[in-house]
Length: 561
Image 1: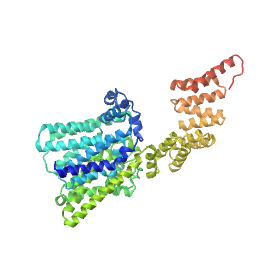
Image 2: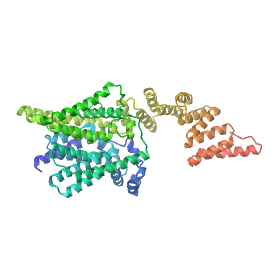
Image 3: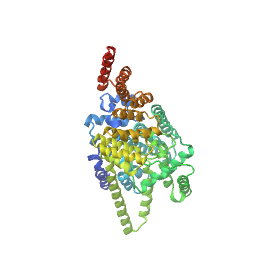
Image 4: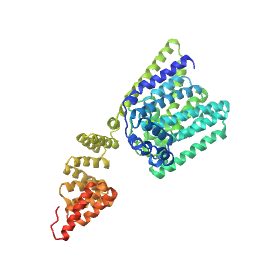
């Protein structure tokens, strides 16, 4: 490695270290971090490795044990201090930056260092780096890129050790996140681009391994959490076409970035939806037609982009697709194709300029990298804490009901009940179809002893959602607090009929029955509540009172309330 290359590597390291300081120093846990990391028993337990590898249903819907193994190791080093996890994510992103530099250089695209620098500081990568639970993105990419480089080395030398190394790293990538399944297709594109012969037997083994692991993961996922979205093949094609332009557009002009993007209008009757599809097909046809003039590189980059994104384009159902059709983290690997193609084209153009213009163009490139870095710094503000995260969601997508729900819950945890109620109210107005928002708003009113207001909201909900167990439960409680036990009993009975697994519903029903002097029924309700949650002290106390009232009735004494 020459001194110039060492300096270039140092600059890449500084770019990542400087522009990801907010993630390393100030960011905490957000959203899924609490579910799949902080609250994950296998991560905290010393025996957790066994569960992570052999009983993964306790962790997540997908089988990505290598990712959770890194969390397990880190927990043994620094517990649940978020700083350590963030630093590891940034270090993995730095390693990926170096690998992108090596990869783009090896495939002989001009401007390899600039492509790596853009990859390092592009704000579209913040979600994968600054969000701890997205360790799967940066870890899988690390093994994916390493496997690609070893395969290329194998293609040049035909030495088995490189083939074995590439296959091992590929399996590691799949066990980190299954989106790495597209690597064999990407390698096939490289062979086509460089007019290289293909060892079909050995590359075929990659396809077999990738498809086997991924299909097994999909079957397992659908067994644990079935997802079946009612989109036709035509609608899915329209989703995919728009998603491709979305990702390409955000890579080229990263503005108005959001954690959760609104769902699109993908009706077949919408001409704009078809416009994205026509434009995508036209671009591929044009790149194919002009391949003799511009080379195969641009088409290879575009096809790599499409192929690598294919698992998340909507042709296969996945859980997050119910929330949004796209996510910035999905293009962490795929974006390399666009970055390399654009930077390579710009680099070729710069080389044709005269000396002064060439220096000016290089200054412009430096400014672009700096601007991307500042946008990356700014985008990390969303990941500082739970409140900043959900405020960012709402600010960029006012129709995201989950944003209002989570922000209201977080403000409630902080004791800022009045602000939480305002958030629920704003969300209910913005997303009137959200049942949970209206229920949470009513619960917030009830918790502040505004029982009549809460009851009115819940009665309105039940006009549109008569089978909402949560609405019946909370309305019953509000009516009980308003000293209307008969009405309360009717709604609470309906609540336990709709969902008998909620201990609070049986407890509140027991209280209403006790007030109505139906003591035997009250005891039965308290028994059901305690069977579900033996720690309910109120159920124990009220059950004892009901039994005493029954005894007094038998003795002819007036029972107290």
